[in-house]
Length: 634
Image 1 (cartoon, rainbow, N blue to C red):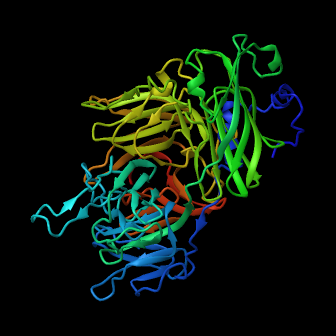
Image 2 (cartoon, rainbow, N blue to C red; image 1 turned 180 degrees about the vertical axis):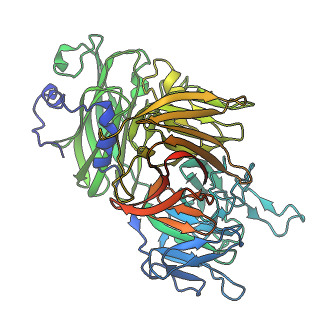
């Protein structure tokens, strides 16, 4: 809570007291990291099986699992906690049910599929999100990972028993044996007082590894192999145990009721702001254009694309439940929200859509007075969104119509770069772990493998596959955001300097040059296939760096680094919470969950070490002329 105020104080004073709250755009990411942006999830603690109904021994709690990359459906694991593992056999293959029941639910977890394995998560034990080793599938179907499995009519004509399956929009599957992040927002079917179904179940959102697979996908009844044939408002979650091996960790959820903060009574005052007053310090100096009652916060109904106005809503809210709420606002212009005697959102300055303000507040059940100001002083700048999340209340827009899209009637057509018969390169700003990098180049290869380098540090930032590059924020209109964006699901690397002259393998890896050595880009050249080679100088040492699509794997890049140096150099390949050596010169990076494969090389020494709370994978490059390769597989 920012401050207590007396509600009878003039509104203009409330607004002026917040005018210094704007933070520079470059600090927006760090601000969000420090703020609480969501209410906490309930975590399933995987110390034992107490969160689940009694089941067979195919389910167990273990330590680190490792999937065999050659043998189908096979795990090895260590004793420990934190991982839920299913290893079925012909005699032991029970499904697993949670002790809790759910209706509407938001579920997040990490899942690992071994080679060619098959499982599924059944919401309410009835509606399945498929889990499958779908790595490299070009045209995913309902039975690939993230698909909504089809329903089944055993009495239908042979070959036509299945119906209503939903294929994922894209295949976002990682390689078998890698952790993958799944997020699902599910809504249970709705029933009237007599128990008659009034609305089908639906999946509001399904995401795998950050990629949207489904949006508002309806299911008219239980899918195939469901535990129950009927439909209920509440039922347990079920994980399929009779098909194949699978591992889970970091399981968390939020259960929701269908509740919202209601607006009982409100008055809207609309002021002319062609004088471009921002921050609002003298509201009474602006001309009042109109005043009327309203039952919704509807900026788009009262604000045209080129208008310059101030909207001020005041009235009464009905708070459904006593507890903690989080409001978040994003605005092109300024906004202030007051509930009771408290300023919830104080953004009375010239903000843009790069900055989101979050505020946590405790509210009591019942009626509360509110005031909301939205100031749009410039005709060419549009955008205002205000969201709220509360106890058992899913985050939703407090506005009847948000304006974050420049014009709802004329949405932006994305500006994308597509790779066809020759590789593409594009210079841009790129976001990496909350930081805007300004000296980046992204490369799209014809095989569908893509990557981004930071030329200032020589560091690999991102790898991804599929579609290449979204330049909308760079080239649309004035390009306010000035950032390019990878179009596929992204695996991010460490982002530190890729090369350094360490005294020994115990030296701390430098994030930037500390002045003891210099590092700079020498540019890049293209071969006849338009594939770039990047050149750098570290003091007098010369380094070149080249990427091509890895052969004989479904998704991967092969990186070739050459050096000519009078001193020993070191190359940092990766860091993570845990780096585990596997057979065949392979390492699994568990922080981002990808593989590094380093062929055996007589002159090159590979080191896995712990430093500053992380594991690091380094390569020692002897002086002289050296060339080595490794593969990044995800």
